[in-house]
Length: 364
Ligand SMILES: [Fe+2]
Ligand SMILES: [Fe+2]
Image (cartoon, rainbow, N blue to C red; front, side, top):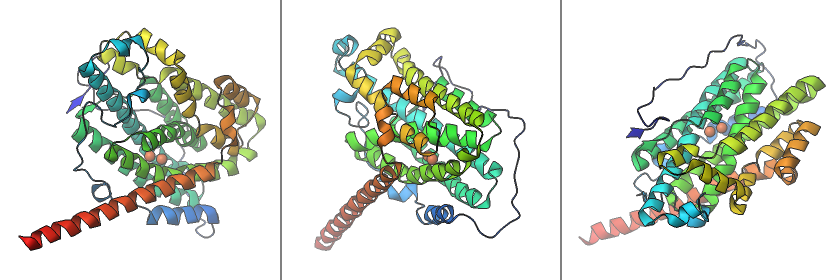
């Protein structure tokens, strides 16, 4: 098992974020609670799943194309760099790009785990604490699946991307619970959800696809929670307080768009990093891909009431304003349906395999 650092040597295994002034809030009123939050909590309890049994870990992954994406989706596709590579080099590039991508998911999920537990501590209402507690367990499972996939199937983990690290630092360095939630649940996980969706819908390798589909099923609840909790809070803030949140969201979106490009992979492979980045900035397909990454963030921000001129202007500049019309609830329902369908397919296959196996045993 290899863990890379930015210098290629073994990385330090711990990272601490000091944060002053975190206030732990107790709630002595045990009755009541908002019905939508409580029903989300009920759903969180009944929809738990075990990664050991729900996923088929016996599936083999092709190291030269772990997720089974057509070449068309490889970020360097269409560049001179890609054209000059032979088959072996292309296989290596696909392997590293997928390992990098899943490593960022893994680190992001650990961020979500820590942030969700912070929300349990700091959010004032008991209904929200209940729900956030189910999310803590969901996020632990997500860390488990991505880490197992990387360790068992790829044998390589990239370190956290510096921009993602900056965002996590901001999410946890601030004592206000809504900022932890805005940074983690709306921005980082919104971006991750869109990236998961591209894997679930366009990759062909069954383990990676079902893994992302099941994680998305949980995330649909997390996004719903973020929307409910923040939607109640944001109208109560002053214009200046809302503007502060908008400014934070704008800076985070530009940071992720411009700095979260897999530079570490290009360095690791000894490629011309500047040329790779230039290709990603100018390729039509990559620009569309980059836009798609905001398809979850934009409608959620609008829905929670962060939709002032600053944010709208930034999204117009990024060419992603059209996503504001998407229905976040419908997106969440679709995520749950896809996971359910995949699970049914798996059950049908398992029943069939069991039937064939017992028939074979009976004839021997
Ligand atoms: Fe997660
Ligand atoms: Fe989440």
